[in-house]
Amino acid sequence: MSRTVIEVRDLCKHFVLHQQGGTRIDALDSINFTVRAGECVALYGPSGAGKSTLLKALYGNYLPTSGKIIVHCPQGAVDIASADPRTVSMLRRTCISYVSQFLRVIPRVSTMDIVAEPLLSAGVRAKTAYERASALLARLNLPPRLWNLAPATFSGGEQQRVNIARGFIRPTPILLLDEPTASLDAMNRKVVVELIREACANGCAVVGIFHDDDTREKVATSLVHINERHDAELKSA
Ligand SMILES: Nc1ncnc2c1ncn2[C@@H]1O[C@H](COP(=O)(O)OP(=O)(O)OP(=O)(O)O)[C@@H](O)[C@H]1O
Ligand SMILES: [Mg+2]
Image 1 (cartoon, rainbow, N blue to C red):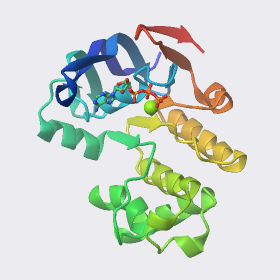
Image 2 (image 1 turned 60 degrees about the vertical axis):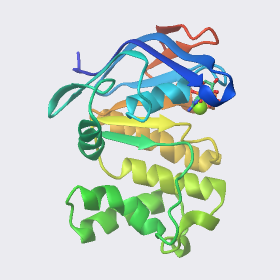
Image 3 (image 1 turned 45 degrees about the horizontal axis):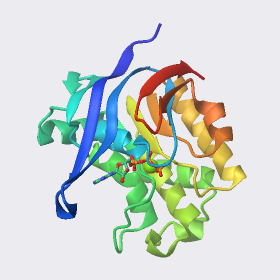
């Protein structure tokens, strides 16, 4: 059996809306699951159940209220739930890739530079980084006439493909995907399914949210149900 890469233990996240009378939202309540190398765990549940919150906690964007998120990376085991900001940024540089639902558009930075950046900042030489960026953008059917433009004016699906190319360009032990196919047509959904399967075949541990049943069924090796009462249980896909 392959090695454990992510262990989520009794994870809770409560939001307190201080500007709105101190209203408390229990977004995650005692979530438990593990992800092994080569697995793709799909977070499954209704809108507002806490799926994106869980993914953001795995990326260190949200500090959990309690519980542990142990990631086993080449540097050793780290609890992201209690790691300091320097450790979180080290993990992001070396170990965890994250495809957010929407591309954070940086004005005047070209598509090629956005996609190549994770490789360039990891020390890969520019020629190799831009070759890999071109290959991925071509595979995702983004027309070459767009490659040197900043994606601010791109369509939703074009921006999403830029975001996916950026997320997949650098192989990492952990890959987090928040609805990567939400704005894509069938042809590009198929490409994303292939990219996810290839990442898993290379030993990546993937945690994803997939809005369409077809994509989820094609890539998920197991489901973590997050229901409206925010209980989670691990089931076989
Ligand atoms: N930063 C925040 N501050 C306060 N409440 C938040 C914050 N982020 C999320 N929430 C709340 O936590 C709950 C879960 O939100 P989340 O975005 O995780 O849901 P989701 O399962 O991803 O839903 P969807 O399928 O619609 O994307 C919601 O009630 C949301 O309002
Ligand atoms: Mg969400």
